[in-house]
Image (cartoon, rainbow, N blue to C red; front, side, top):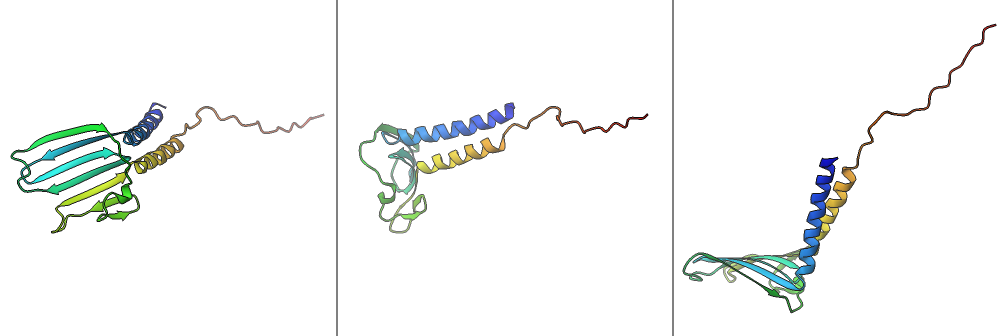
Amino acid sequence: MLRRWLIRSLALMLLTLCVVAWVGSRFFYFQVDRRSPLLILTFWIGGGMVGYQHTHVPGASTGAHWSWGCGRYSYPFEWINHDPEAHHFIVLSYKVATPSAIESNVWIPLWFPVLVSGVLLWFFWQNTKPNPQGFPIAPAAPTTEVKSQ
């Protein structure tokens, strides 16, 4: 029983985390950068999106360091129209670095992890139902008595 509720609790926690991130990203953004002399790696969440950007910029920084930022998200964001040069596949928007473009991007709308975690919760809930334990109760078979005279 403990194992069943532990699995269900983890799936419910994942769904809650995804819903809070999705709703919260409509009002706030959060960004983390890793800068080095040759490239910038950026993880970004905001506008109902989660994104990753890998930018090659020689001489972008003198040393390697981390930076971050957060604040109010104030403009509408449509993930499909974010980058006109990006390719779109179902829920994924991506752009690969080419000689003319020095950055690679991946964008995922946050409703997709909510949908996946909701399906996982339903799957785990269905497959961790309790098995009834105990003594089987069956009606007694009718007995025939022969009366002797």
